[in-house]
Image (cartoon, rainbow, N blue to C red):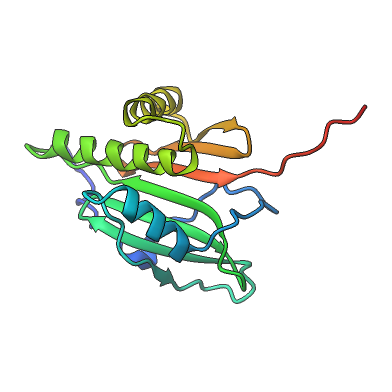
Length: 180
């Protein structure tokens, strides 16, 4: 006889995991969540991101405000905001894999949202190029706790947790002047 753990319920906003890859002292994008959503939703009328809701944090000393938006049953957008200014430190799209007849469609939708997010931060990419970019990042990050790639002042992070979910994060990085 084989014993298995019972299936876990989908996480609620309060249970969205914290991003272990967020760098301490990371800079912010020069935009608020409201600005991001306006631009994103205008550029992607068929794949909107709804209003974000704050996620309560049990530690009062947190320097970040976390928020999430449920896109559908298996896809979430989340963010880490600088407390006080509301500027974005990290934006994520998380896909919670499903099994069954809708698996391929759900996965394709998740990849499309991730490609849209990449294009928000690199407007020079065509939709096909952003799809190629996310597929490249997913291949590199497959099975790793997280994989990161820096492109200019942007850091893309893939966190592949297998059956527990797949996340793309987009974060700004501090650029340092090279010393002579």
